[in-house]
Image (cartoon, rainbow over all chains, first blue to last red):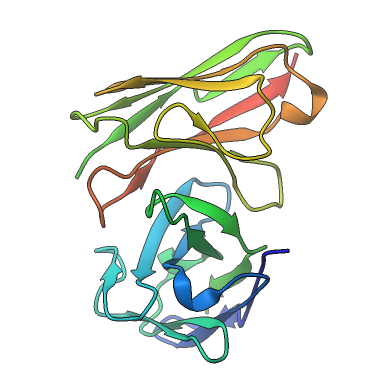
Length: 120
Length: 108
């Protein structure tokens, strides 16, 4: 069974940092592209970042470029999101999501999400 | 960036009804459109990709159609478990993929 379990969310002050993790199991993690997608409270979905299966290709949404860093450790079946210079508008539930092999930018499995709250 | 306009923003319907949700792209996106269902407090679930291909395990009462700029998600014979929020997603212009604003489907 495919499982994605996020962790690392919490309350952080504006300007602070946080590192999210996503532990994957039930599939060959190293073969799949991975993404972070977020959802502000009561709002819609926003794609945040993408990383290829090898980690060689990375993309970011303009809203987080220069502040967030996506990475992965295929030996540990884990995906990460380092978030720096956090702003109030980064407050959201952050989901890790697996890219489908045949339609890379659609997401066939999602974690349960981890809440990041940026507030003083 | 490609804008996606989803309508309606909310919809009331009864069990057994047939409902249609629409997404319109600001420019042609071929068939690079997906639909997701999200229930409160849960992660989104992929229903349809490539505009009309049903994801494995999704009931056949869900269907998608369209290409270019206009797309529809149809749910025939609504079941109680279908009351949720639905999002479309364009993935024609990656990495700038975008989601629609969502349609909240409520029980009448």
